[in-house]
Length: 317
Image 1 (cartoon, rainbow, N blue to C red):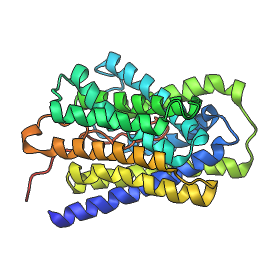
Image 2 (image 1 turned 120 degrees about the horizontal axis):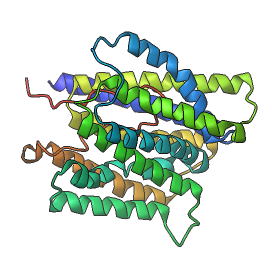
Image 3 (image 1 turned 30 degrees about the horizontal axis):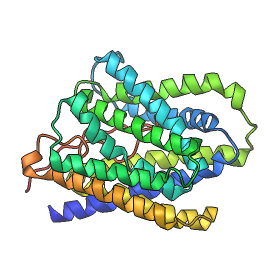
Image 4 (image 1 turned 90 degrees about the horizontal axis):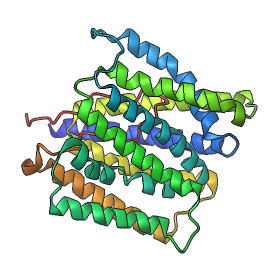
């Protein structure tokens, strides 16, 4: 069991390292192209991966959602997350963007109350409050001008949390292909409709870069699936916070960025709160109340096939 958890942690670390590399390319392209164009082309180049997954799907049924209302709301949340996250990466330092996106588990905990009917007791409630204070520290209102990049990062965190909690609610009833395909189609149609107003000619090297985004996202998703199937969720989920280390390294190497003290303090508060919630949910007394542990570690942007089965809690061997 211990060896399985070590392998799971390593696969999760690899997954988030790949995702961080993916985000570097998004940031690079975002300096020249609108997020609408990047999202549209990412979806376009992601369809071959979806096709391969559809070929391997042997489950019976059609593509009609069993919960159309929740599916529509989740699809809208993912579309918002996609364009917001891609813009945030292009407009903000990597470390600051990650720090704000790390609020997603906190928001999932809050949304679990009205949507899942779960109970958030005092300790987890206080952890959420502390984590949100950390978000305020990162945003530092009154000291810096809050721009569209900050609002985009917050919108991506909210959209990612809403997506995660809806998957927890309907994921066992809906086919994986429905959860995967509808957001991609929505991104393709909506971004395609907006694209004529934002399109910039793209040389071959940048088009190839978008293809690399698609490939990296697919590889990261595969690593994450292996991680969740190998080890327990409480080991895998905290690995998402390793992205802040990659943000510091890649930001310094490629974009001349250095996280300032305020961002570092705010990120530490958010990460600490998120870790407390994760380990609190893993407590035996809270075994039936795990909205964060059973959600993905990355906001789903609907640009690539990122849906995976809900991770199950493993029993000791």
